[in-house]
Amino acid sequence: MGTVYRVKLVDPKLSPSDIEALKGAVTQRLRKINLQMSHYIPESEISRFNRAPANKPFPVSPEFAAVVRFALKICKRSGGAFDPTLGPVINLWGFGETNEQHAVPSADDLAAALKKTGWHHLAVTDNGALVKDLPGLTLNLGGIAKGFGVDEIIGILRNHKLANAYVSIGGEVRVIGLSPRGTKWRLGISAPVDQWRENDPMASIVALSNRSLSTSGDYQNFFRDALGRRHCHIIDPKTGAPVQHMLGGVSVTAPDSMTADALGTTLFVLGPEAGRKFIDSWEGAAALFIVRQPDGSFRQFPSAHFVELTSP
Image 1: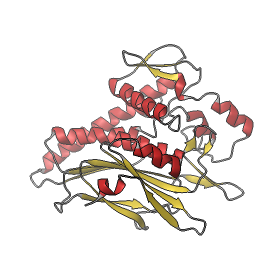
Image 2 (image 1 turned 90 degrees about the vertical axis):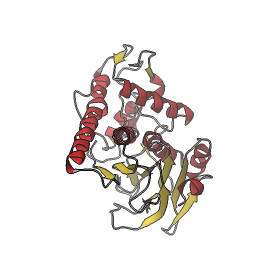
Image 3 (image 1 turned 180 degrees about the horizontal axis):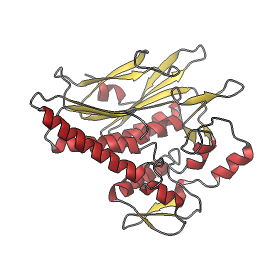
Image 4 (image 1 turned 90 degrees about the horizontal axis):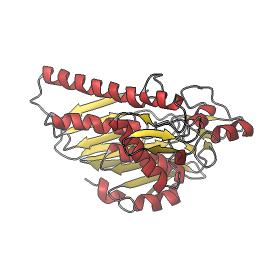
């Protein structure tokens, strides 16, 4: 998935052979997910669907169909703030798999790319096939697939009767049970400073058990144009341009990682005001919005239930 994954287990009874068996099961599952949903693999299910013609059902695995169903649920509920069909636009800005040259596209090129997008042109049939009604429509599940992968790893650990663990893929984290200290897992939320690294400051620390945390922001994957304006990898589906507001980062907690992953992208597109209204309507989820101030400092705006869901 273009990033690293980590699994931390709290179980002194595990033997080296047990750990190797778990590593093998996790690796095998992640490879399967890549073969389903990675647009970087030419013969993955998603890549073959992206090349497929319109108006013809395309059979996919049940897991792939379930992820797309949930993605479309977020699309509809957010009014299109989440949209997994933005591949042509993402590539145009240099954040995709076919183009890594960051540049501001021309208005004509952007308009042409936008004509090939739109979540409402995508559907999952009753028997689990994907179908598009727009030629050239493609899927990019970068805003949801890593969260699904985390949930799948958690499922493997639970099948092995492991009750206390930490799992992450990139910025998607899910914890179950308790940490080695016998308390809730303490997770850091990074401050939205450019190219944040592990020794850079944290904006906040949260305490979680049997929950997920996902952070979306504009401070890791971005470029600046000739005028110094920041352009990040998160695209506003309505404009086809990188999101432009003062929100530096948003961290979402939810019961599972797929939900937290998709909500993080959604809230970043919506911005702090509309985002807080949206997350307050989502049962079991909450968010912390970190907003840049004119003097370069940051202010934190938690949603209604964030403190109660993340307290020790």
